[in-house]
Length: 175
Picture 1 (cartoon, rainbow, N blue to C red):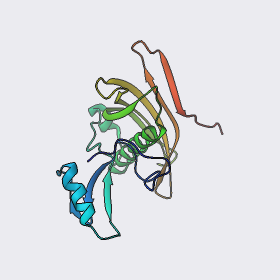
Picture 2 (cartoon, rainbow, N blue to C red):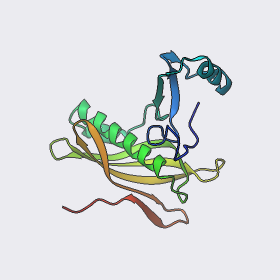
Picture 3 (cartoon, rainbow, N blue to C red):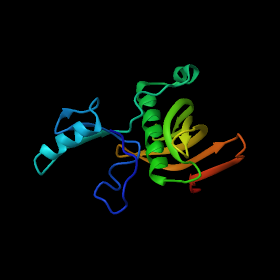
Picture 4 (cartoon, helix red, strand yellow):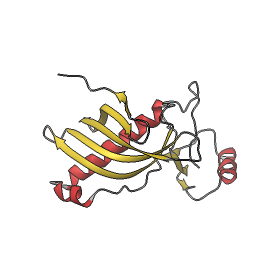
């Protein structure tokens, strides 16, 4: 079951993001169950329920030439974390010009700086504004890691075909 939207006054707001996928209820795998089966499990559950979510992206493709440039597995993991944090930020923005971010196609570029605490990434993502057709955007994001948490400090999406503009969702502050 994939989240389509979140009510701003609901209990899940800020915790669950559109595009997230429910994978477990009270430790039981529900990743292959249909909506009705999941609802039955929830109704039968005790008052306190433990839900496990993923971002629905699965594993992501990284351009082979980029993969060769990473100095360590930790750098590759950091790049993956920044892309996932950027996707979550885009999905939470509910930007009507962009529509819904459906999936990440490929990570094209990345650089880790400042002693491994800052990462700049560029990737292609699929978006849809109507749930039927899709288009690809070039997404650029900068993430800073502090105490194990990724903070997206710059985020923009650009589509060339007939759009000719970049949408800045997060503008990096100078200094």
